[in-house]
Amino acid sequence: MFEKFIEFINKSTCLSDDDICYLRAHANVKSYKKGEGIISAGKVVKHIYIVLEGCVRLYYNVDGKDKTAFFYNEGDFIWANKSLNNEEPTQKNFEAIEDSTIIQIDKRAFYQLVESSTNFETVAKYEKEKELMAYQQQIAYFITLTPEERFIKLLETNGVLFQRVSQQYIASYLGISAETLSRIKKRVFNKYKEELCAI
Image 1: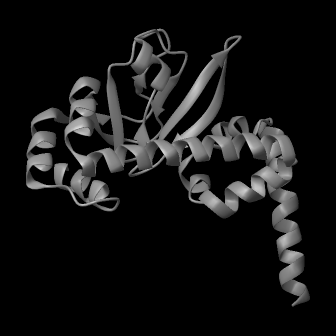
Image 2 (image 1 turned 60 degrees about the horizontal axis):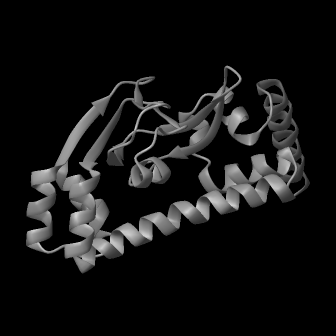
Image 3 (image 1 turned 45 degrees about the vertical axis):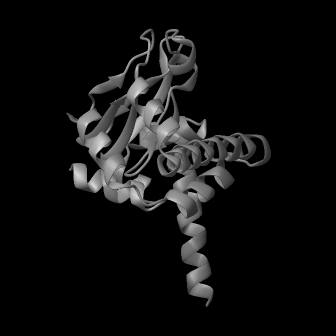
């Protein structure tokens, strides 16, 4: 599994042998069962996580209800920046929604490698920017698109989620009820069938 982790990293840059040895000494491979919590609200986050296999959901608990905010797939880094940087309890919850294998690195070891390795600094910068852009795009979708348009965008950009994630979580992510999602799916797929028949 560690080799798979290095493969993910080397897609962005080429790590030196020293970088790989350092990571081998400081990266822990963790396994989580479906439904198992990885980070819980109220805890101070002390690690950075990288998803090797599986899928992870970020959610907030609002008035006793879970609100899904984001999904992480293979190769994605999981940061809880505010808690990591300020050493204060996080408001975020991260949960494995499939059996998942995840790399865990202590934040001090992680940032020490960022400071000492230009190549790994490139990786960290790229992954932070990638997540920030995804968050910004998600906010823009909520402001500018209807629920049906958000559904179509998700289908186009990350359609595999519909095979891996429960309808309940996808509905929460889109900001709608499961019943509304069901109606949207039916409407969109019926429209698609009609377009195919017209060809």
